[in-house]
Image 1 (cartoon, rainbow, N blue to C red):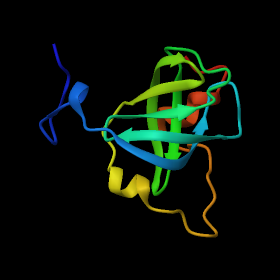
Image 2: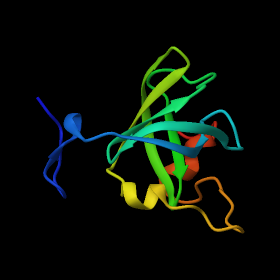
Image 3: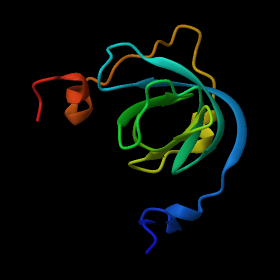
Length: 123
């Protein structure tokens, strides 16, 4: 059974992927700094990154890409030097394709459960 994004009425398993050459920053559970990865394709429901060293299927990460700052995602597959990530909520691909400003810095999540992602004592 397909999952649906009720805001857009698009089946998540069928979202159109766009080939891109973008950079995404990933925050992981076991690290305080972001890792930068090249993005090969993106859709409103997920993306594919290159060189996912240390990522495991089932891991939760927070993605910052373009003007999208904190998109939680699950690692759904890792193979052949690539990894597929599925966003918890659909993102705006047009905003993800926009460049960050020259002075913009990527910061770890600071609110809600995203902030607790790196807390070893959080349940």
